[in-house]
Length: 265
Image 1: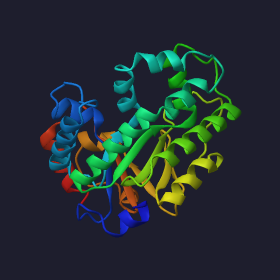
Image 2 (image 1 turned 30 degrees about the vertical axis):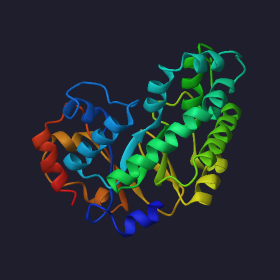
Image 3 (image 1 turned 120 degrees about the horizontal axis):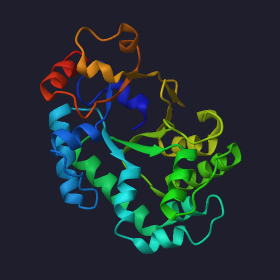
Image 4 (image 1 turned 90 degrees about the vertical axis):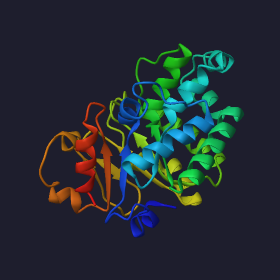
């Protein structure tokens, strides 16, 4: 299901879909500070079930970088292989090309999507960010990430997306907040990613600190984090968007969060 399908019939019954980056908030409130069980699929499904019951988002938010980090902590041989060469891109290509990680993610996304009866948002780093992070994990840090390096990284990501198959994904969200790229990343530069996603019926967007670029003819508005700790009606400009994207602060009051969620119906 693409974003167009999600906007036509939001699973929550809201006027417009609400996508929630709930990782930090769910860790604080649902997990009581304990880590999310990324490597235990049954427990992870239970965690997302609790998140859905509490927040009722229109899609399950899966933080792929955190999921990968947890898997890498259990597979030191893969980390060693990622660092075997210092050539730019080798660490990311090795990470994304690992058959076991791909199969594990396919199983996780399929199981989570089926059990929650919600599509999944694959929250992944932008090409420049993912490239830099992978090299950091491998111990072959990059001094800079130029446009050519980011473009090459986007091709590795496109190939990786193509290997995921028909998993129940609605949106692939590339996150460029804090990107190490020399220049501001743009979704228009990552045609290889958008083409693969379009082929399997997924949407792609690129999140910046100040806005979200969407490949489809869809307007995604960012709900400011201050919304969750303030009072009053939501900004009318936000409510004019097709989709709302929110990050709930970990320190937000659970009771107040529920009150604020009600205003986004």
